[in-house]
Image (tube, rainbow, N blue to C red):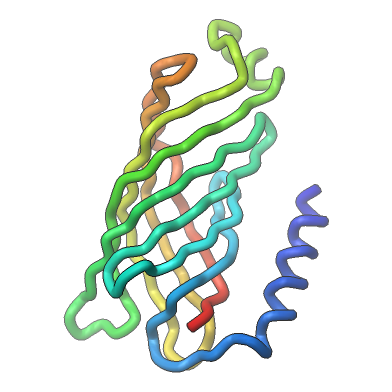
Length: 160
Protein backbone atom coordinates (compact mmCIF):
# COMPACT_ATOMS: atom_id res chain seq x y z
CA UNK A 1 0.00 0.00 0.00
CA UNK A 2 2.84 2.40 0.89
CA UNK A 3 4.57 1.70 -2.42
CA UNK A 4 1.40 2.34 -4.40
CA UNK A 5 0.77 5.61 -2.58
CA UNK A 6 4.39 6.70 -3.09
CA UNK A 7 4.18 5.99 -6.82
CA UNK A 8 0.89 7.89 -7.11
CA UNK A 9 2.38 10.85 -5.27
CA UNK A 10 5.43 10.86 -7.56
CA UNK A 11 3.22 10.78 -10.67
CA UNK A 12 1.17 13.73 -9.43
CA UNK A 13 4.31 15.61 -8.45
CA UNK A 14 6.11 15.17 -11.75
CA UNK A 15 3.05 15.63 -13.94
CA UNK A 16 2.39 19.07 -12.43
CA UNK A 17 5.90 20.46 -12.89
CA UNK A 18 4.97 21.98 -16.25
CA UNK A 19 1.92 23.68 -14.74
CA UNK A 20 3.64 25.25 -11.78
CA UNK A 21 4.50 28.93 -11.97
CA UNK A 22 7.34 29.56 -9.58
CA UNK A 23 9.03 32.75 -8.46
CA UNK A 24 10.20 34.12 -5.15
CA UNK A 25 9.92 32.56 -1.74
CA UNK A 26 6.15 32.50 -1.33
CA UNK A 27 3.46 30.11 -2.46
CA UNK A 28 -0.31 29.75 -2.39
CA UNK A 29 -0.81 25.97 -2.37
CA UNK A 30 1.49 23.06 -1.56
CA UNK A 31 1.04 19.27 -1.58
CA UNK A 32 3.33 16.66 -0.12
CA UNK A 33 4.04 14.17 2.62
CA UNK A 34 4.63 14.52 6.33
CA UNK A 35 6.76 12.15 8.36
CA UNK A 36 5.46 10.83 11.68
CA UNK A 37 3.31 9.05 11.80
CA UNK A 38 3.01 9.49 8.04
CA UNK A 39 0.52 11.70 6.20
CA UNK A 40 -0.46 13.27 2.93
CA UNK A 41 -0.64 17.03 3.37
CA UNK A 42 -2.13 19.90 1.42
CA UNK A 43 -1.76 23.50 2.53
CA UNK A 44 -3.50 26.49 0.97
CA UNK A 45 -3.16 30.16 1.89
CA UNK A 46 -6.53 31.90 2.13
CA UNK A 47 -4.84 35.26 2.93
CA UNK A 48 -1.22 36.49 3.13
CA UNK A 49 -0.85 35.29 6.72
CA UNK A 50 -3.59 32.62 7.04
CA UNK A 51 -3.64 29.08 5.68
CA UNK A 52 -5.71 25.92 5.94
CA UNK A 53 -3.99 22.56 6.03
CA UNK A 54 -5.49 19.12 5.54
CA UNK A 55 -3.72 15.99 6.68
CA UNK A 56 -4.56 12.37 5.93
CA UNK A 57 -2.60 10.08 8.27
CA UNK A 58 -2.17 6.34 7.87
CA UNK A 59 -0.53 3.98 10.34
CA UNK A 60 -0.72 0.27 11.20
CA UNK A 61 -3.74 0.77 13.50
CA UNK A 62 -5.92 2.94 11.24
CA UNK A 63 -6.21 6.42 9.79
CA UNK A 64 -6.91 9.99 10.85
CA UNK A 65 -8.08 13.11 9.00
CA UNK A 66 -7.04 16.47 10.45
CA UNK A 67 -7.91 20.01 9.43
CA UNK A 68 -5.87 22.97 10.72
CA UNK A 69 -6.31 26.75 10.47
CA UNK A 70 -2.87 28.37 10.68
CA UNK A 71 -1.77 31.95 11.36
CA UNK A 72 1.62 32.70 9.76
CA UNK A 73 4.19 35.34 10.60
CA UNK A 74 7.53 36.36 9.07
CA UNK A 75 10.96 36.39 10.65
CA UNK A 76 12.80 39.65 9.93
CA UNK A 77 15.92 39.03 7.86
CA UNK A 78 14.97 35.45 6.95
CA UNK A 79 13.21 35.40 3.57
CA UNK A 80 11.09 32.32 3.05
CA UNK A 81 10.98 31.41 6.76
CA UNK A 82 7.72 31.76 8.66
CA UNK A 83 6.37 30.67 12.02
CA UNK A 84 2.81 29.40 12.30
CA UNK A 85 0.30 28.42 14.97
CA UNK A 86 -3.39 27.65 15.10
CA UNK A 87 -6.31 25.40 16.01
CA UNK A 88 -7.79 22.37 14.30
CA UNK A 89 -10.00 19.29 14.50
CA UNK A 90 -9.56 15.59 13.76
CA UNK A 91 -11.50 12.40 13.23
CA UNK A 92 -9.74 9.06 13.36
CA UNK A 93 -10.61 5.42 12.86
CA UNK A 94 -8.69 2.48 14.27
CA UNK A 95 -8.81 -1.26 13.67
CA UNK A 96 -8.93 -4.28 16.00
CA UNK A 97 -5.14 -4.38 16.35
CA UNK A 98 -5.35 -1.11 18.34
CA UNK A 99 -8.04 -2.59 20.59
CA UNK A 100 -5.75 -5.56 21.42
CA UNK A 101 -3.28 -3.11 22.99
CA UNK A 102 -5.99 -1.09 24.74
CA UNK A 103 -8.96 -3.39 25.39
CA UNK A 104 -10.65 -0.76 27.58
CA UNK A 105 -11.11 1.45 24.51
CA UNK A 106 -14.23 0.35 22.72
CA UNK A 107 -15.30 1.49 19.32
CA UNK A 108 -13.30 2.53 16.33
CA UNK A 109 -13.74 6.29 16.03
CA UNK A 110 -11.93 9.19 17.67
CA UNK A 111 -12.97 12.85 17.38
CA UNK A 112 -11.10 15.74 18.92
CA UNK A 113 -9.39 19.10 18.73
CA UNK A 114 -5.85 19.95 17.73
CA UNK A 115 -3.34 22.74 18.02
CA UNK A 116 -0.27 23.33 15.93
CA UNK A 117 2.92 25.38 16.23
CA UNK A 118 5.78 25.22 13.77
CA UNK A 119 8.20 26.63 11.21
CA UNK A 120 7.60 26.81 7.45
CA UNK A 121 10.35 27.42 4.88
CA UNK A 122 9.89 28.02 1.14
CA UNK A 123 13.05 27.82 -0.98
CA UNK A 124 13.64 30.69 -3.40
CA UNK A 125 13.70 29.64 -7.04
CA UNK A 126 12.53 26.05 -6.61
CA UNK A 127 9.01 24.80 -5.87
CA UNK A 128 9.83 23.11 -2.55
CA UNK A 129 8.52 23.88 0.92
CA UNK A 130 9.63 22.32 4.22
CA UNK A 131 7.92 22.51 7.58
CA UNK A 132 8.56 21.23 11.08
CA UNK A 133 5.81 21.34 13.68
CA UNK A 134 4.28 20.02 16.88
CA UNK A 135 0.60 19.15 16.86
CA UNK A 136 -0.83 18.22 20.27
CA UNK A 137 -4.39 16.94 20.28
CA UNK A 138 -7.15 15.98 22.67
CA UNK A 139 -9.63 13.30 21.71
CA UNK A 140 -12.94 13.44 23.53
CA UNK A 141 -15.25 11.11 21.57
CA UNK A 142 -15.27 7.45 22.74
CA UNK A 143 -12.50 8.12 25.24
CA UNK A 144 -10.72 11.05 26.85
CA UNK A 145 -7.13 11.11 25.61
CA UNK A 146 -4.38 13.74 25.25
CA UNK A 147 -1.81 13.01 22.56
CA UNK A 148 1.39 15.04 22.48
CA UNK A 149 3.19 13.06 19.79
CA UNK A 150 1.61 14.29 16.54
CA UNK A 151 3.45 16.60 14.20
CA UNK A 152 6.61 16.14 12.27
CA UNK A 153 8.59 17.08 9.19
CA UNK A 154 6.83 17.81 5.89
CA UNK A 155 8.15 18.24 2.38
CA UNK A 156 5.79 19.72 -0.21
CA UNK A 157 5.69 20.75 -3.84
CA UNK A 158 4.46 24.34 -4.15
CA UNK A 159 2.19 26.06 -6.64
CA UNK A 160 2.01 29.82 -7.11
